[in-house]
Image 1 (cartoon, rainbow, N blue to C red):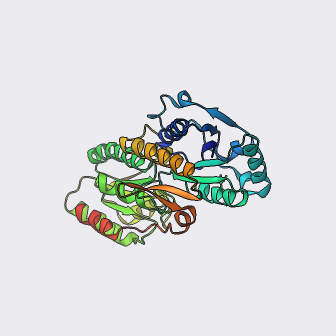
Image 2: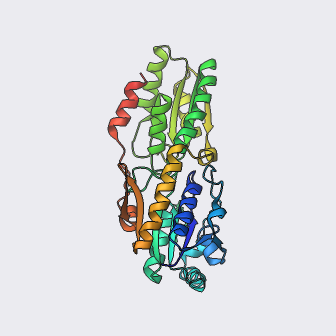
Image 3: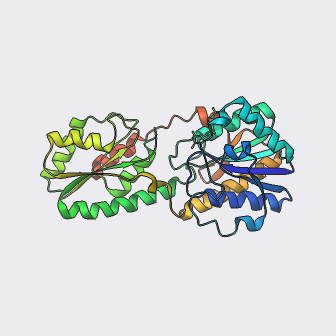
Length: 324
Ligand code: ADP
């Protein structure tokens, strides 16, 4: 392995820059030629591949987003697109690729590595924390903190006006962000994709809070839950429960941004460092992930297909108890 490229793909996540920095500098430390691919797989197809040195990644450790940009690239799903991507890498004699992204990114990397024999290592980068083989994905911790900060502000105004707020958070089909932020912000209830909570139970819970003189209530709605978005749920609840003035906030893309937390800077650095060390050793088709306090390898196959996110029932039960 002489020449190594790195790209970020899919949804951006805080900590990706810390990881890019670690990848470039670890590679250079080991005497490898390092390349950054712009805009994910699109940059492979467009030949937007730049040589990087240690100074190319100066002063980015603390920045949100990704300096390499990211994109959703449909052309890479086609054989013809992959073929062009391979030719562009081959022209530069790049024989190893590190991809930072989520499950879509890994699916593409796996197909690409299998077909063309390019060594690939994946780094789990998504705020959703929905990949098997890493206790935490890059960006998740920062997103949790960003969401908590926003909810704290909403709580101030909710409390002053005796209001009920429905706050919609991201996570796609994983309720991990919603459940953790519900605990950390003292939400009265949380609706998760993995769990059927009937609206009747939700109203009973809210009513009991009102009866015991709660001055405000906050319900976290995970975007993938079965009852629809926060507006739909608020409308249904409002028809039967009128104690509070009801408001809705969809946090949206602010959840993706911001300077990475200390945890994500360290995780990004560790994963990037490990990704290069493993790829130099000849590892391929693997994801580097955090398990306990160790960085471990999980095959891309397993990371993708064992990824049934298991909701912790004990944590859900705890949120009910702590919000009485
Ligand atoms: P994420 O990596 O965050 O899950 P996406 O699902 O958008 O984000 O995937 C990122 C990119 O990975 C896609 O835009 C596409 O270029 C590539 N990709 C996804 N699925 C495949 C696939 N089956 N084959 C090849 N490339 C894929």
